[in-house]
Image 1 (tube, helix red, strand yellow):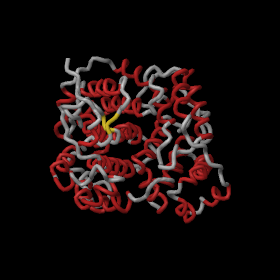
Image 2 (cartoon, one colour):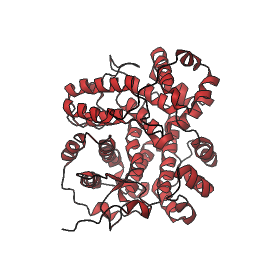
Image 3 (tube, one colour):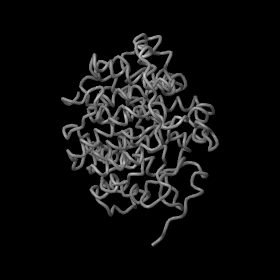
Image 4 (cartoon, one colour):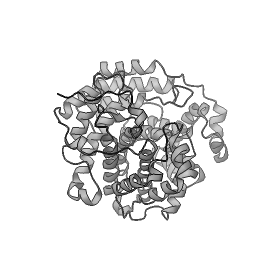
Length: 443
């Protein structure tokens, strides 16, 4: 899993571990990236405020490093984003030792003050057993601890999954430990309210998927009760909107997204494609182009699926289940931020005037961005790679984004964020989200 020097406590990047989307990665930048990530791990909490907003430094640094950032660009990104982080809390060794007991472990879950304790615990576990046995035990073994942790992996707008995914993609056991510790301090409501009842309604794990994710998405859009279940004024629109006003409907549709062991590769392409479609096509023709901040998390988390389905130590059932849960959460994400009208022509008519190389160079130079931009660009490039083998079955699999549309979307991302004070729209399906954005300039 790890390079010779990357350990559960030491981040060590090298060009051997440059990730699944990489462009002109520099060895001198690997050293600086390793240093700043090490400092971040030792100095900062996983949340930068008391509202549970996430420290994105590892996501940002790894994304721009993979896109060829210079040492100076990496240092600038770190210096910009470390200014507002919370300090790490001290480790309580007594609590860390107690976490070996399942009851104690479960009792501390969801409490952010124990992040440092969980981090120390998972570092010890990985040192003693290795990454693969620890992931099996704490995510995929089916014990109460693993079932609760798997739910929490998808908490907080998919952030623990994204953080864990970076650790897996770049072969960094310390980042895997961070991702597991972050998982342990997140919400648990998605289990009893969503993932578990959906899995039950689907008849268990790994049933053959009869509908494409796109077909389910379109049926959701046509279901008026579900489509309008989240409201602009809701706080926590999944829990307090969708699952309060249309839980039965959401569960019914989500349960139709199933993945058999034979379908793992094609369903991965479906998830990657469908989230890119709804995140990109959720535009207003009378407004400037903007990507929805919440929808884009579905895209930025999708890149890790391409890595996860290749892991030899994960069995097919675990891979199928992760895919099912990801696709189902993405479907709820679509509803929660307003079930936006999707306009494919916004993509197909867009001019792809800039190359991937130009867009990579732009993305890695945005020091003040907290990483969402380069994460999105990398995920789009991965989408192009992951979906290409299935384009001859695009209609059957419901793949709306094909050919040069990936590059067109990346052009949209660059143009819609370049020189802008507001990079993203927040809730693309709601009229209120767009009110402060101007019209498009017509040449």
